[in-house]
Image 1 (cartoon, helix red, strand yellow):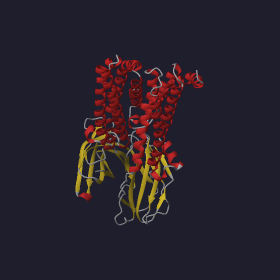
Image 2 (cartoon, one colour; image 1 turned 180 degrees about the vertical axis):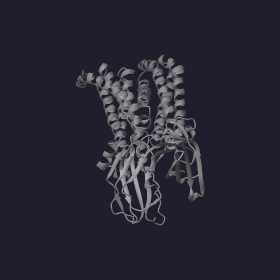
Image 3 (tube, rainbow, N blue to C red; image 1 turned 90 degrees about the horizontal axis):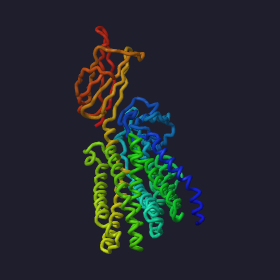
Image 4 (cartoon, rainbow, N blue to C red; image 1 turned 30 degrees about the vertical axis):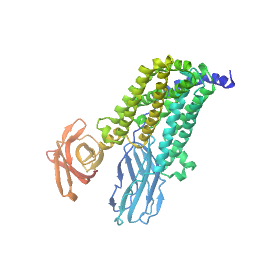
Length: 538
Protein backbone atom coordinates (compact mmCIF):
# COMPACT_ATOMS: atom_id res chain seq x y z
CA UNK A 1 0.00 0.00 0.00
CA UNK A 2 1.37 3.43 -0.95
CA UNK A 3 1.97 6.20 1.63
CA UNK A 4 -1.02 8.04 0.18
CA UNK A 5 -3.16 4.98 0.85
CA UNK A 6 -2.02 4.95 4.48
CA UNK A 7 -3.01 8.57 4.78
CA UNK A 8 -6.32 7.83 3.11
CA UNK A 9 -6.94 5.00 5.57
CA UNK A 10 -6.32 7.26 8.53
CA UNK A 11 -8.68 9.81 7.06
CA UNK A 12 -11.48 7.38 6.29
CA UNK A 13 -13.20 7.64 9.67
CA UNK A 14 -12.93 11.40 9.59
CA UNK A 15 -14.38 11.58 6.09
CA UNK A 16 -17.27 9.33 7.02
CA UNK A 17 -18.07 11.56 9.98
CA UNK A 18 -17.74 14.56 7.66
CA UNK A 19 -20.29 13.03 5.29
CA UNK A 20 -22.74 12.53 8.15
CA UNK A 21 -22.13 16.07 9.36
CA UNK A 22 -22.79 17.43 5.88
CA UNK A 23 -26.16 15.71 5.72
CA UNK A 24 -27.08 16.98 9.18
CA UNK A 25 -25.97 20.49 8.27
CA UNK A 26 -27.99 20.27 5.08
CA UNK A 27 -31.18 19.55 7.00
CA UNK A 28 -30.53 22.14 9.69
CA UNK A 29 -29.33 24.99 7.44
CA UNK A 30 -30.94 28.25 8.44
CA UNK A 31 -33.48 29.75 6.05
CA UNK A 32 -32.09 32.16 3.49
CA UNK A 33 -34.00 34.81 1.60
CA UNK A 34 -34.94 35.02 -2.02
CA UNK A 35 -33.63 37.33 -4.72
CA UNK A 36 -34.19 40.81 -3.26
CA UNK A 37 -35.85 43.79 -4.94
CA UNK A 38 -36.19 47.43 -3.94
CA UNK A 39 -39.66 48.22 -2.62
CA UNK A 40 -39.63 51.85 -1.48
CA UNK A 41 -37.24 54.74 -0.95
CA UNK A 42 -37.26 57.83 1.20
CA UNK A 43 -36.95 60.39 -0.26
CA UNK A 44 -38.91 58.73 -3.05
CA UNK A 45 -37.43 58.62 -6.53
CA UNK A 46 -38.07 61.86 -8.44
CA UNK A 47 -39.38 63.76 -5.43
CA UNK A 48 -38.59 67.35 -4.42
CA UNK A 49 -38.18 67.97 -0.69
CA UNK A 50 -38.12 71.26 1.14
CA UNK A 51 -35.11 70.52 3.35
CA UNK A 52 -32.16 68.14 3.32
CA UNK A 53 -33.20 64.71 4.61
CA UNK A 54 -31.76 63.67 7.96
CA UNK A 55 -31.79 60.04 6.80
CA UNK A 56 -32.20 58.28 3.45
CA UNK A 57 -34.06 54.97 3.56
CA UNK A 58 -34.03 52.03 1.14
CA UNK A 59 -36.56 49.28 1.87
CA UNK A 60 -36.13 45.91 0.15
CA UNK A 61 -38.28 42.82 -0.20
CA UNK A 62 -35.68 40.78 1.72
CA UNK A 63 -32.72 41.46 4.03
CA UNK A 64 -29.65 42.72 2.16
CA UNK A 65 -26.07 43.81 2.81
CA UNK A 66 -24.87 47.07 1.16
CA UNK A 67 -21.63 46.88 -0.81
CA UNK A 68 -21.61 50.36 -2.34
CA UNK A 69 -23.50 53.55 -1.42
CA UNK A 70 -22.60 56.77 -3.24
CA UNK A 71 -24.20 60.21 -3.44
CA UNK A 72 -23.61 62.44 -6.46
CA UNK A 73 -24.03 66.15 -5.70
CA UNK A 74 -25.54 68.82 -8.01
CA UNK A 75 -21.99 69.89 -9.03
CA UNK A 76 -21.17 66.35 -10.21
CA UNK A 77 -18.86 65.38 -7.35
CA UNK A 78 -19.44 62.01 -5.69
CA UNK A 79 -19.08 61.06 -2.04
CA UNK A 80 -19.03 57.51 -0.66
CA UNK A 81 -21.59 56.97 2.10
CA UNK A 82 -20.19 54.84 4.90
CA UNK A 83 -22.63 55.65 7.71
CA UNK A 84 -25.66 53.36 7.49
CA UNK A 85 -27.72 51.03 9.67
CA UNK A 86 -29.40 47.74 8.75
CA UNK A 87 -32.84 47.16 10.23
CA UNK A 88 -34.28 43.91 8.89
CA UNK A 89 -35.15 44.73 5.24
CA UNK A 90 -34.35 48.45 5.58
CA UNK A 91 -31.08 50.32 4.98
CA UNK A 92 -31.02 53.68 6.77
CA UNK A 93 -28.26 55.92 5.39
CA UNK A 94 -26.95 59.04 7.08
CA UNK A 95 -26.21 61.67 4.37
CA UNK A 96 -23.53 64.37 4.62
CA UNK A 97 -24.54 67.38 6.67
CA UNK A 98 -23.80 69.97 3.98
CA UNK A 99 -26.46 69.15 1.38
CA UNK A 100 -27.51 72.27 -0.52
CA UNK A 101 -30.24 73.07 -3.01
CA UNK A 102 -30.28 71.00 -6.21
CA UNK A 103 -30.62 67.43 -7.45
CA UNK A 104 -28.85 64.43 -5.95
CA UNK A 105 -28.29 60.90 -7.24
CA UNK A 106 -28.11 58.12 -4.65
CA UNK A 107 -26.44 55.09 -6.23
CA UNK A 108 -26.75 51.86 -4.27
CA UNK A 109 -25.53 48.31 -4.68
CA UNK A 110 -26.43 45.50 -2.29
CA UNK A 111 -26.11 41.73 -2.16
CA UNK A 112 -29.12 39.60 -1.24
CA UNK A 113 -28.86 36.51 0.91
CA UNK A 114 -28.90 34.21 -2.12
CA UNK A 115 -25.55 35.74 -3.07
CA UNK A 116 -26.72 37.81 -6.05
CA UNK A 117 -25.87 41.53 -6.19
CA UNK A 118 -28.42 44.10 -7.37
CA UNK A 119 -28.06 47.85 -7.82
CA UNK A 120 -29.86 50.98 -8.84
CA UNK A 121 -30.17 54.72 -8.27
CA UNK A 122 -32.61 57.19 -6.77
CA UNK A 123 -32.89 60.87 -7.73
CA UNK A 124 -34.27 63.47 -5.35
CA UNK A 125 -34.01 67.22 -5.22
CA UNK A 126 -33.75 69.75 -2.41
CA UNK A 127 -35.63 73.01 -3.07
CA UNK A 128 -35.77 72.65 -6.84
CA UNK A 129 -34.34 70.11 -9.31
CA UNK A 130 -31.47 70.68 -11.70
CA UNK A 131 -32.37 70.83 -15.37
CA UNK A 132 -32.54 67.33 -16.83
CA UNK A 133 -31.96 65.55 -13.54
CA UNK A 134 -32.92 61.90 -13.75
CA UNK A 135 -31.84 58.49 -12.62
CA UNK A 136 -28.93 56.76 -14.30
CA UNK A 137 -29.70 53.50 -16.01
CA UNK A 138 -27.73 50.57 -14.70
CA UNK A 139 -25.11 49.57 -17.29
CA UNK A 140 -24.41 45.88 -17.82
CA UNK A 141 -20.71 45.09 -17.48
CA UNK A 142 -20.48 42.40 -20.15
CA UNK A 143 -16.84 41.40 -19.41
CA UNK A 144 -17.80 40.74 -15.78
CA UNK A 145 -20.86 38.77 -16.87
CA UNK A 146 -18.74 36.75 -19.28
CA UNK A 147 -16.28 35.98 -16.49
CA UNK A 148 -19.08 34.88 -14.18
CA UNK A 149 -20.52 32.61 -16.87
CA UNK A 150 -17.18 31.04 -17.83
CA UNK A 151 -16.29 30.48 -14.18
CA UNK A 152 -19.65 28.84 -13.50
CA UNK A 153 -19.35 26.50 -16.51
CA UNK A 154 -15.80 25.53 -15.53
CA UNK A 155 -16.93 24.87 -11.96
CA UNK A 156 -19.71 22.61 -13.24
CA UNK A 157 -17.19 20.68 -15.35
CA UNK A 158 -15.02 20.09 -12.30
CA UNK A 159 -17.83 19.13 -9.94
CA UNK A 160 -19.82 16.94 -12.33
CA UNK A 161 -17.28 15.43 -14.72
CA UNK A 162 -14.32 15.60 -12.32
CA UNK A 163 -15.76 14.71 -8.93
CA UNK A 164 -18.33 12.46 -10.57
CA UNK A 165 -15.55 10.91 -12.65
CA UNK A 166 -13.55 10.03 -9.53
CA UNK A 167 -16.67 8.37 -8.11
CA UNK A 168 -17.23 6.41 -11.33
CA UNK A 169 -13.63 5.22 -11.48
CA UNK A 170 -13.87 3.67 -8.02
CA UNK A 171 -17.47 2.38 -8.11
CA UNK A 172 -18.04 1.46 -11.75
CA UNK A 173 -14.51 0.94 -13.16
CA UNK A 174 -13.08 -0.85 -10.09
CA UNK A 175 -10.28 1.67 -9.70
CA UNK A 176 -9.07 1.49 -13.33
CA UNK A 177 -6.57 4.21 -14.28
CA UNK A 178 -7.58 4.41 -17.95
CA UNK A 179 -9.57 7.65 -17.46
CA UNK A 180 -7.19 9.14 -14.88
CA UNK A 181 -5.76 11.81 -17.17
CA UNK A 182 -9.16 13.02 -18.39
CA UNK A 183 -10.67 13.17 -14.90
CA UNK A 184 -7.65 15.01 -13.49
CA UNK A 185 -7.97 17.53 -16.31
CA UNK A 186 -11.62 18.21 -15.45
CA UNK A 187 -10.69 18.62 -11.76
CA UNK A 188 -8.12 21.22 -12.80
CA UNK A 189 -10.74 23.04 -14.89
CA UNK A 190 -13.07 22.99 -11.88
CA UNK A 191 -10.40 24.42 -9.58
CA UNK A 192 -9.72 27.25 -12.03
CA UNK A 193 -13.46 27.83 -12.34
CA UNK A 194 -13.87 28.07 -8.56
CA UNK A 195 -11.15 30.71 -8.30
CA UNK A 196 -12.44 32.59 -11.34
CA UNK A 197 -15.99 32.56 -9.96
CA UNK A 198 -14.85 33.95 -6.61
CA UNK A 199 -13.01 36.86 -8.23
CA UNK A 200 -15.78 37.80 -10.64
CA UNK A 201 -18.38 37.42 -7.89
CA UNK A 202 -16.42 40.09 -6.03
CA UNK A 203 -16.38 42.38 -9.09
CA UNK A 204 -20.12 41.96 -9.50
CA UNK A 205 -20.73 42.52 -5.80
CA UNK A 206 -18.94 45.87 -5.59
CA UNK A 207 -19.68 46.93 -9.19
CA UNK A 208 -16.05 47.15 -10.32
CA UNK A 209 -14.64 46.52 -13.85
CA UNK A 210 -12.44 43.57 -14.86
CA UNK A 211 -9.31 45.74 -14.56
CA UNK A 212 -9.69 45.63 -10.77
CA UNK A 213 -9.96 41.84 -10.56
CA UNK A 214 -6.78 41.35 -8.56
CA UNK A 215 -7.57 43.83 -5.79
CA UNK A 216 -7.78 42.06 -2.39
CA UNK A 217 -10.93 44.02 -1.53
CA UNK A 218 -12.67 42.58 -4.59
CA UNK A 219 -11.91 38.98 -3.60
CA UNK A 220 -12.95 39.68 -0.03
CA UNK A 221 -16.27 41.11 -1.26
CA UNK A 222 -16.93 37.97 -3.28
CA UNK A 223 -16.08 35.58 -0.47
CA UNK A 224 -18.23 37.28 2.18
CA UNK A 225 -21.39 36.65 0.14
CA UNK A 226 -23.23 33.34 0.37
CA UNK A 227 -21.28 32.25 -2.72
CA UNK A 228 -18.08 32.26 -0.65
CA UNK A 229 -18.92 29.01 1.20
CA UNK A 230 -19.89 27.47 -2.14
CA UNK A 231 -16.38 28.17 -3.45
CA UNK A 232 -14.76 26.78 -0.30
CA UNK A 233 -16.74 23.53 -0.31
CA UNK A 234 -16.34 23.17 -4.10
CA UNK A 235 -12.56 23.35 -3.74
CA UNK A 236 -12.81 20.83 -0.88
CA UNK A 237 -14.82 18.49 -3.12
CA UNK A 238 -12.25 18.79 -5.91
CA UNK A 239 -9.45 18.08 -3.45
CA UNK A 240 -11.26 15.03 -2.06
CA UNK A 241 -11.74 13.71 -5.59
CA UNK A 242 -8.03 14.16 -6.25
CA UNK A 243 -7.23 12.34 -3.01
CA UNK A 244 -9.52 9.48 -4.03
CA UNK A 245 -7.67 9.16 -7.35
CA UNK A 246 -4.31 9.21 -5.58
CA UNK A 247 -5.37 6.52 -3.13
CA UNK A 248 -5.41 3.69 -5.67
CA UNK A 249 -8.02 0.98 -5.40
CA UNK A 250 -9.89 -0.20 -2.35
CA UNK A 251 -12.59 0.63 0.13
CA UNK A 252 -10.86 3.76 1.43
CA UNK A 253 -10.70 5.35 -2.00
CA UNK A 254 -14.37 4.53 -2.55
CA UNK A 255 -15.42 6.23 0.68
CA UNK A 256 -13.32 9.28 -0.18
CA UNK A 257 -14.99 9.50 -3.61
CA UNK A 258 -18.44 9.34 -1.96
CA UNK A 259 -17.41 12.13 0.39
CA UNK A 260 -16.27 14.17 -2.64
CA UNK A 261 -19.68 13.80 -4.33
CA UNK A 262 -21.52 14.73 -1.13
CA UNK A 263 -19.30 17.76 -0.60
CA UNK A 264 -19.86 18.90 -4.19
CA UNK A 265 -23.62 18.58 -3.78
CA UNK A 266 -23.47 20.46 -0.49
CA UNK A 267 -21.39 23.25 -2.09
CA UNK A 268 -24.02 24.03 -4.71
CA UNK A 269 -26.92 23.99 -2.25
CA UNK A 270 -25.33 26.78 -0.18
CA UNK A 271 -26.08 29.57 -2.67
CA UNK A 272 -28.15 30.36 -5.72
CA UNK A 273 -31.81 30.98 -6.55
CA UNK A 274 -33.08 27.48 -5.86
CA UNK A 275 -31.30 27.05 -2.54
CA UNK A 276 -32.63 30.39 -1.29
CA UNK A 277 -36.27 29.55 -1.97
CA UNK A 278 -38.80 28.52 0.64
CA UNK A 279 -39.49 26.01 2.05
CA UNK A 280 -35.84 25.51 2.98
CA UNK A 281 -36.39 22.03 4.40
CA UNK A 282 -37.44 20.92 0.90
CA UNK A 283 -35.39 23.06 -1.46
CA UNK A 284 -31.88 22.51 -0.07
CA UNK A 285 -32.23 18.70 -0.01
CA UNK A 286 -33.72 18.88 -3.52
CA UNK A 287 -30.69 20.81 -4.79
CA UNK A 288 -28.38 18.39 -2.96
CA UNK A 289 -29.97 15.33 -4.56
CA UNK A 290 -30.19 17.04 -7.96
CA UNK A 291 -26.45 17.78 -7.96
CA UNK A 292 -25.47 14.35 -6.62
CA UNK A 293 -27.54 12.55 -9.28
CA UNK A 294 -26.04 14.61 -12.10
CA UNK A 295 -22.51 13.97 -10.78
CA UNK A 296 -23.08 10.20 -10.72
CA UNK A 297 -24.51 10.18 -14.25
CA UNK A 298 -22.20 12.73 -15.90
CA UNK A 299 -19.09 11.49 -14.10
CA UNK A 300 -19.41 8.01 -15.58
CA UNK A 301 -19.22 9.12 -19.22
CA UNK A 302 -15.48 9.82 -19.50
CA UNK A 303 -14.45 6.60 -17.65
CA UNK A 304 -16.76 4.47 -19.85
CA UNK A 305 -15.33 6.05 -23.01
CA UNK A 306 -11.79 5.47 -21.75
CA UNK A 307 -12.50 1.81 -20.93
CA UNK A 308 -13.91 1.09 -24.38
CA UNK A 309 -10.82 2.74 -25.85
CA UNK A 310 -8.53 0.33 -23.97
CA UNK A 311 -10.30 -3.04 -23.95
CA UNK A 312 -13.70 -4.55 -24.58
CA UNK A 313 -13.81 -7.08 -21.74
CA UNK A 314 -13.23 -4.64 -18.85
CA UNK A 315 -15.41 -2.04 -20.54
CA UNK A 316 -18.35 -4.43 -20.61
CA UNK A 317 -18.11 -4.95 -16.86
CA UNK A 318 -17.96 -1.20 -16.25
CA UNK A 319 -20.99 -0.63 -18.48
CA UNK A 320 -22.92 -3.37 -16.70
CA UNK A 321 -22.37 -1.81 -13.26
CA UNK A 322 -23.29 1.64 -14.54
CA UNK A 323 -26.43 0.37 -16.31
CA UNK A 324 -27.63 -1.34 -13.13
CA UNK A 325 -27.20 1.81 -11.05
CA UNK A 326 -28.14 4.67 -13.37
CA UNK A 327 -31.97 4.17 -13.40
CA UNK A 328 -32.02 5.05 -9.69
CA UNK A 329 -29.94 8.17 -10.26
CA UNK A 330 -32.25 9.23 -13.11
CA UNK A 331 -35.28 8.70 -10.87
CA UNK A 332 -33.77 10.88 -8.13
CA UNK A 333 -32.79 13.49 -10.72
CA UNK A 334 -36.31 13.62 -12.17
CA UNK A 335 -37.99 13.97 -8.77
CA UNK A 336 -35.58 16.64 -7.53
CA UNK A 337 -35.83 18.55 -10.82
CA UNK A 338 -39.62 18.49 -10.63
CA UNK A 339 -39.61 19.96 -7.12
CA UNK A 340 -37.18 22.72 -8.11
CA UNK A 341 -39.15 23.60 -11.24
CA UNK A 342 -42.50 23.82 -9.45
CA UNK A 343 -41.16 26.06 -6.69
CA UNK A 344 -39.07 28.29 -8.93
CA UNK A 345 -41.48 28.80 -11.83
CA UNK A 346 -44.81 28.58 -9.96
CA UNK A 347 -47.12 29.03 -12.97
CA UNK A 348 -47.11 27.67 -16.55
CA UNK A 349 -47.06 31.25 -17.84
CA UNK A 350 -43.68 31.72 -16.19
CA UNK A 351 -42.20 29.28 -18.68
CA UNK A 352 -42.76 31.58 -21.65
CA UNK A 353 -42.99 35.07 -20.13
CA UNK A 354 -39.72 35.16 -18.18
CA UNK A 355 -36.06 34.75 -19.13
CA UNK A 356 -35.71 32.15 -16.39
CA UNK A 357 -38.55 30.10 -17.85
CA UNK A 358 -37.09 30.26 -21.37
CA UNK A 359 -33.73 29.06 -20.07
CA UNK A 360 -35.56 26.25 -18.30
CA UNK A 361 -37.29 25.21 -21.54
CA UNK A 362 -33.98 25.16 -23.41
CA UNK A 363 -32.40 23.07 -20.66
CA UNK A 364 -35.45 20.79 -20.61
CA UNK A 365 -35.16 20.24 -24.36
CA UNK A 366 -31.51 19.25 -23.97
CA UNK A 367 -32.42 16.95 -21.08
CA UNK A 368 -35.10 15.23 -23.16
CA UNK A 369 -32.49 14.61 -25.85
CA UNK A 370 -30.07 13.35 -23.21
CA UNK A 371 -32.70 11.00 -21.74
CA UNK A 372 -33.48 9.72 -25.23
CA UNK A 373 -29.83 8.88 -25.88
CA UNK A 374 -29.55 7.26 -22.46
CA UNK A 375 -32.65 5.15 -23.16
CA UNK A 376 -31.22 3.98 -26.48
CA UNK A 377 -27.95 3.11 -24.77
CA UNK A 378 -29.69 1.28 -21.96
CA UNK A 379 -32.22 -0.74 -23.98
CA UNK A 380 -30.60 -1.09 -27.41
CA UNK A 381 -26.81 -0.94 -27.16
CA UNK A 382 -25.82 -2.06 -23.68
CA UNK A 383 -26.46 -5.78 -24.12
CA UNK A 384 -24.52 -5.99 -27.36
CA UNK A 385 -21.67 -3.88 -26.02
CA UNK A 386 -21.34 -6.07 -22.93
CA UNK A 387 -21.00 -9.07 -25.26
CA UNK A 388 -18.25 -7.31 -27.23
CA UNK A 389 -20.16 -6.79 -30.47
CA UNK A 390 -18.12 -4.27 -32.52
CA UNK A 391 -21.12 -2.55 -34.15
CA UNK A 392 -22.90 -2.04 -30.83
CA UNK A 393 -19.70 -0.75 -29.22
CA UNK A 394 -19.10 1.78 -32.01
CA UNK A 395 -22.64 3.11 -31.71
CA UNK A 396 -22.45 3.21 -27.94
CA UNK A 397 -19.17 5.14 -27.93
CA UNK A 398 -20.60 7.69 -30.36
CA UNK A 399 -23.77 7.98 -28.29
CA UNK A 400 -21.82 8.51 -25.03
CA UNK A 401 -19.68 11.14 -26.76
CA UNK A 402 -22.88 12.88 -27.85
CA UNK A 403 -24.20 12.68 -24.27
CA UNK A 404 -21.02 14.38 -23.04
CA UNK A 405 -21.43 17.21 -25.54
CA UNK A 406 -25.09 17.66 -24.57
CA UNK A 407 -24.11 17.78 -20.89
CA UNK A 408 -21.59 20.53 -21.63
CA UNK A 409 -24.36 22.45 -23.41
CA UNK A 410 -26.62 21.95 -20.38
CA UNK A 411 -23.88 23.34 -18.12
CA UNK A 412 -23.57 26.37 -20.40
CA UNK A 413 -27.34 26.97 -20.40
CA UNK A 414 -27.73 26.44 -16.64
CA UNK A 415 -24.93 28.94 -15.96
CA UNK A 416 -27.06 31.71 -17.49
CA UNK A 417 -29.52 31.32 -14.60
CA UNK A 418 -27.03 33.41 -12.61
CA UNK A 419 -28.44 36.46 -14.44
CA UNK A 420 -32.16 35.61 -14.50
CA UNK A 421 -34.28 35.93 -11.35
CA UNK A 422 -36.81 33.08 -11.12
CA UNK A 423 -40.55 33.75 -11.64
CA UNK A 424 -41.25 33.20 -7.93
CA UNK A 425 -39.23 36.34 -7.09
CA UNK A 426 -40.90 38.30 -9.89
CA UNK A 427 -44.31 37.26 -8.55
CA UNK A 428 -43.26 38.41 -5.09
CA UNK A 429 -42.15 41.73 -6.54
CA UNK A 430 -45.46 42.23 -8.36
CA UNK A 431 -47.37 41.42 -5.19
CA UNK A 432 -45.33 43.62 -2.87
CA UNK A 433 -47.20 45.80 -0.40
CA UNK A 434 -47.02 49.51 0.36
CA UNK A 435 -47.60 50.49 3.98
CA UNK A 436 -48.87 53.90 5.10
CA UNK A 437 -49.20 55.09 8.70
CA UNK A 438 -52.04 57.55 9.39
CA UNK A 439 -52.65 59.34 12.66
CA UNK A 440 -54.91 61.90 14.32
CA UNK A 441 -55.45 62.89 17.94
CA UNK A 442 -58.23 60.30 18.17
CA UNK A 443 -56.99 57.31 16.19
CA UNK A 444 -54.10 55.72 14.33
CA UNK A 445 -54.18 53.38 11.33
CA UNK A 446 -51.68 51.20 9.48
CA UNK A 447 -52.90 50.88 5.90
CA UNK A 448 -51.59 48.26 3.45
CA UNK A 449 -52.03 48.46 -0.34
CA UNK A 450 -51.34 45.22 -2.24
CA UNK A 451 -49.86 45.31 -4.77
CA UNK A 452 -48.43 48.83 -4.89
CA UNK A 453 -48.90 48.97 -8.66
CA UNK A 454 -51.42 50.21 -11.21
CA UNK A 455 -54.52 48.05 -11.52
CA UNK A 456 -56.77 46.29 -9.06
CA UNK A 457 -55.47 46.51 -5.50
CA UNK A 458 -56.61 45.36 -2.09
CA UNK A 459 -56.56 47.78 0.84
CA UNK A 460 -56.56 46.78 4.48
CA UNK A 461 -56.45 48.99 7.56
CA UNK A 462 -55.72 48.14 11.19
CA UNK A 463 -57.29 50.92 13.28
CA UNK A 464 -56.70 51.68 16.97
CA UNK A 465 -57.07 54.56 19.40
CA UNK A 466 -54.25 57.09 19.61
CA UNK A 467 -52.85 55.27 22.66
CA UNK A 468 -52.88 51.99 20.65
CA UNK A 469 -55.75 50.52 22.64
CA UNK A 470 -58.47 48.69 20.65
CA UNK A 471 -60.96 50.73 18.64
CA UNK A 472 -64.14 49.32 17.13
CA UNK A 473 -65.52 51.91 14.65
CA UNK A 474 -69.06 51.75 13.40
CA UNK A 475 -68.01 52.39 9.80
CA UNK A 476 -64.85 53.00 7.77
CA UNK A 477 -64.69 54.52 4.29
CA UNK A 478 -61.56 54.61 2.11
CA UNK A 479 -61.17 57.66 -0.11
CA UNK A 480 -58.52 57.87 -2.87
CA UNK A 481 -57.85 60.79 -5.21
CA UNK A 482 -55.17 62.07 -7.58
CA UNK A 483 -55.62 65.84 -8.11
CA UNK A 484 -52.54 66.07 -10.35
CA UNK A 485 -54.19 63.68 -12.82
CA UNK A 486 -57.61 65.31 -12.32
CA UNK A 487 -59.02 62.15 -10.75
CA UNK A 488 -61.82 62.98 -8.34
CA UNK A 489 -62.18 61.07 -5.04
CA UNK A 490 -62.92 57.34 -5.28
CA UNK A 491 -64.92 56.20 -2.25
CA UNK A 492 -65.32 52.64 -1.05
CA UNK A 493 -66.92 51.46 2.18
CA UNK A 494 -64.59 49.04 3.94
CA UNK A 495 -65.68 45.62 5.17
CA UNK A 496 -64.95 44.54 8.70
CA UNK A 497 -62.97 41.32 9.10
CA UNK A 498 -61.00 39.51 11.75
CA UNK A 499 -57.76 41.28 10.70
CA UNK A 500 -59.21 44.78 10.32
CA UNK A 501 -61.07 46.72 7.67
CA UNK A 502 -60.64 45.84 4.01
CA UNK A 503 -61.52 46.99 0.50
CA UNK A 504 -60.75 43.93 -1.62
CA UNK A 505 -61.15 45.29 -5.17
CA UNK A 506 -60.46 48.94 -5.90
CA UNK A 507 -58.85 49.96 -9.22
CA UNK A 508 -56.10 52.59 -9.41
CA UNK A 509 -55.75 53.39 -13.14
CA UNK A 510 -52.52 55.43 -13.25
CA UNK A 511 -49.21 55.52 -11.37
CA UNK A 512 -47.99 58.38 -9.25
CA UNK A 513 -48.69 60.01 -5.89
CA UNK A 514 -52.22 59.34 -4.61
CA UNK A 515 -53.96 60.94 -1.66
CA UNK A 516 -55.42 58.47 0.82
CA UNK A 517 -58.04 59.28 3.44
CA UNK A 518 -59.86 57.14 5.97
CA UNK A 519 -63.24 58.41 7.21
CA UNK A 520 -63.71 56.60 10.51
CA UNK A 521 -67.10 56.85 12.22
CA UNK A 522 -66.29 56.13 15.85
CA UNK A 523 -69.84 56.63 17.18
CA UNK A 524 -73.12 58.33 16.23
CA UNK A 525 -71.65 61.66 17.28
CA UNK A 526 -67.94 61.29 16.50
CA UNK A 527 -65.98 60.96 13.27
CA UNK A 528 -62.28 61.31 12.51
CA UNK A 529 -60.53 61.68 9.17
CA UNK A 530 -56.95 60.45 8.69
CA UNK A 531 -55.01 61.52 5.60
CA UNK A 532 -51.75 60.60 3.92
CA UNK A 533 -50.17 59.79 0.56
CA UNK A 534 -49.13 56.60 -1.26
CA UNK A 535 -46.86 55.99 -4.25
CA UNK A 536 -48.34 53.72 -6.92
CA UNK A 537 -45.83 52.20 -9.32
CA UNK A 538 -46.48 51.65 -13.08
